[in-house]
Image 1 (cartoon, one colour):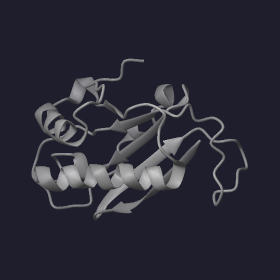
Image 2 (cartoon, helix red, strand yellow):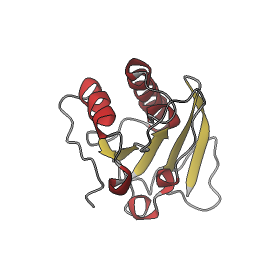
Image 3 (cartoon, one colour):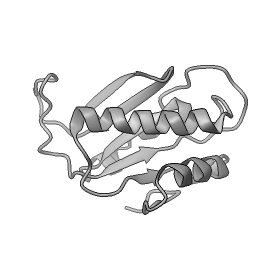
Image 4 (tube, one colour):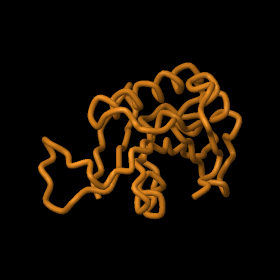
Length: 143
């Protein structure tokens, strides 16, 4: 598996997908990627002023094993902050960075969130609706 981590718009992010063993990170081999992208939202409630954290779901083996890429940002967690405009901008910037690095996904962006910890569902709905009004979206993984 390949996981790229860094900071976008001051928040920690993660891009993950299957990768052949020993690939050159400067020239990623995308042969194991099915062209579909999942944006993983991390549940949480609370007020904070941090960079967030990279949620374990951003490396979900069931999703990655089917060839999906997973994009995640700590900036889309209400436990990190409650600024919806900032969260929306961060999601767009994170998606844009993925596209620049790996190319445009072949299907609309899918959205996932842990069902058992869906305490910020309305936050995710607001961000998702403002970013991709025609997206086929899901609150929980449906694979």
